[in-house]
Image (cartoon, rainbow, N blue to C red):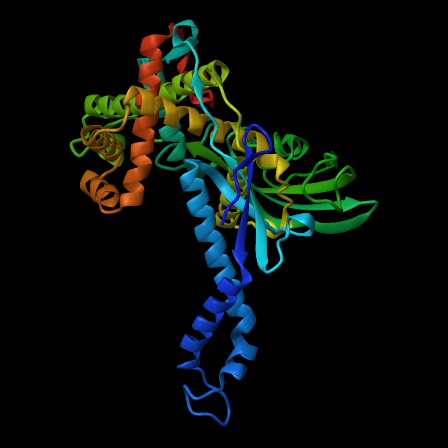
Length: 449
């Protein structure tokens, strides 16, 4: 039996669930008799163990199972009868004091319900629609990056198929140098401060600036001693904030040679006949696909920000807590994939709370938008989205099979289509300002390798 629903706050509710102890005991006895049919004990044949012994061994466990089942069913019946949509899981606590009835067992179920979502007037919403274009300059920059990715090195001063690197035999930015080095703090070598035949490309930032600056300008066989202050936030705690004295000896200098943009280069990018025009067209197509995805993402963010401002709702704490746990688990898994131990890093809940609250709020808003405006994803839309994904892979058919063979993967695509439907709907109803974003800014890396 359940009492009437108590309203504790805007979203929080409470129901008292009460059961006669006789019902609980009767069900416990019934289940113990069933278990006794197969129970085993020393000195007894299977199924012949006395019921008292079975009760002594399994009574507590069976009673807990009965109570959990009765609470769950009673709670479900109560919220269904009251037409409530429960957000998260209820907090079940035994009821004591004046609320307890003799001969009965009672529990308080405290829970949250889903909020009413009120969608404001979209006609007054201001949204930025991002635009960006791919020009020949972007293609040229991409080709330069691809060339740098295929760089190979020759010993400076030695003749090769590509020359000798010029007359300057000193180490410069872009050169790969091989050095021996030793570092000391207060005259004592420290762990990690010594290496032999260590290769590093100058200008890539793998070493501290002072180290690279000291190596720059040296010739093979030259040695240099210099001070190197470690930053206070340096990852090596033993040396962080301290100044070491390093001595480096340069043993080898190799200059970089990037491949020419020719037919062979085009073939290395998958253009079978080596046609440079086809190569540029292929690069442009790939860039436009990436630009399209990033433009859509920026526009979507603008739409979502606008919806948050125009939609009034209370966010259930239970759903936020669940999403915090989900985000924390995703972070732990990502750390493991990167070779890190999640146990070595503190992941306080506050780290994810703001993001989780935004995700939950948007999830509730989007669900309401889809429901009231009939923006459900169609099969044709889902298929088109998967086909679009597949275009960026060498074997599109394998990608199609990957998604259509698994319902959960397809559900992820459906969620993306739903979001896009909502974005397009809002763009059609709101005040849209088109914003042109330079390619480098959109890509976020200034097109550097």
